[in-house]
Image (tube, rainbow, N blue to C red; front, side, top):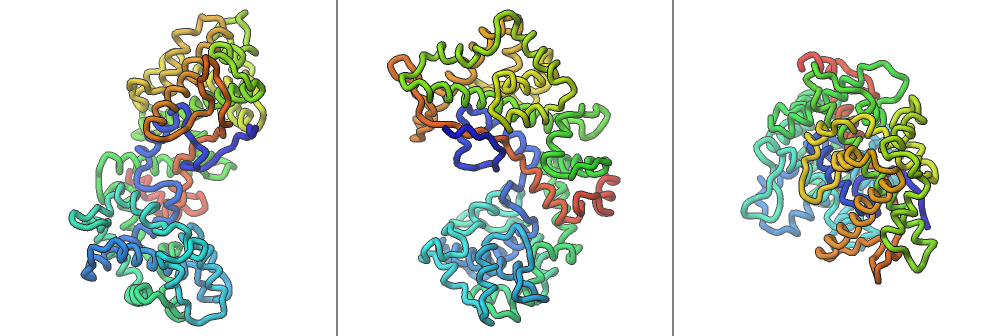
Length: 498
């Protein structure tokens, strides 16, 4: 059995959410960072897609979805070629990152041809292995379009089968058009023909994402969008406050690189300042990490149960399996005493370090429950602050419901209480969630209940959530708020204006 535990990106197929605890956590960070995802890597794509869509809408389009998709694929493939083309060293890649179709562009540009024909690579009937991207519709429709709708740049046309720019989207397109000048018509002509020569690539290379730094008006328009000034909706204000929280962290002197892990753990390990206008945002990010840690603990208990089942082909009765998982604990101390002891033994270790030990080893029961012990120490006496971000709903299981149960049961003998916890929040919970998904035609059982016994079906891959903070940092860098993790003059001005 593969018992490996690691961090992976949101959306990976193996992340099954077997206890339905990931969904509330993801919902929280989507609220705090709306408008982009872990795969929308460069903000200038928003300008570019708004621009070519505006051009398409003005070009007397038909209602044909095929024609629309053809135009989208050609625009996306040509943008990759333009972005990876190196005008100073044509035989080498420009090194641009976060580009849809990057591998195709690098390979194609290495050919010793003055004219590049990309019609076949973008044709819907081409074999997937020969397309610029294997996905038939390219990246736009599934990666950028949903986030551009969410941020308010696109909307579904009332009489057509595709998205069109909103008023805000057209305004951003106009700024982009002004930035690129004569490169715009040259790009549209090449995209329509499916052929581009090296001179044209040199001309349109000014459209690449990193050239945003040379387009101050366009960068300012993107910044207004990201900071909620273009569309001041509640979700945009929430994103603005998260970005301001990142800028605040960038001012703190530390040897640690400003990245997603530093942000999530610093916010978790520090108390929000009640006097700060960012108090609620900081508290919500802390609640995010608490929720993800609690989910990880429960999934590790489930994985432990599955490991016991793999060694017993005849299976176990559910209460019996729960008791086996809990057996390393003792009834000589209470649940509350057991958790307090675990946290005391971890001394001054951070929750990040405690959780890392669980992820980097084959953990014992003490190791698995140590992160939960830390959460109980922080919120056990009063988990109500967590309810601000994890609203109590029927059949919903979150860090708040777990800590409420522990507080109610903390005088119970430890092994007995942990067995009950495992039975209710792990084993029975998985059967409930899997049966619910089966009604929707999805088989997700990791174990099945047959003749009164639980039987192993599939192993579990446990992973932490990646909350879009890496994307936020990339967007902030491209928009000029940060440079290499350091605050820029633009970022400092944004802080002072807050």
